[in-house]
Image 1 (cartoon, one colour):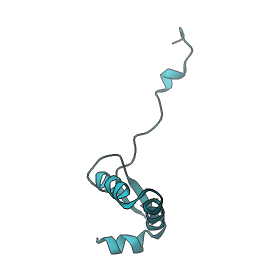
Image 2 (cartoon, rainbow, N blue to C red; image 1 turned 45 degrees about the vertical axis):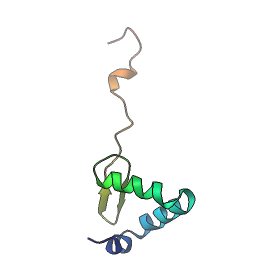
Image 3 (cartoon, helix red, strand yellow; image 1 turned 60 degrees about the horizontal axis):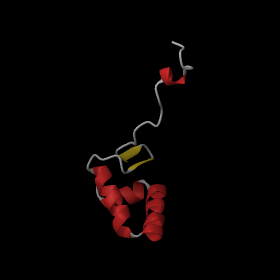
Image 4 (cartoon, helix red, strand yellow; image 1 turned 90 degrees about the horizontal axis):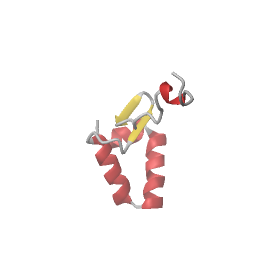
Length: 72
């Protein structure tokens, strides 16, 4: 799939990326996208059943961490 097809298939993602490029510059945004496409958890997008990049790690914690100290 070419970049043009992704822009057409994922228009809201493309709009967001364009806004990020405008706010932060093309180079850092493109670097984060390239890293995500290369397997690093720096970029992930999903729209219209298409996913690209790597999902970020779950921010959760083990349930056992919620028990009071001294309790099993």
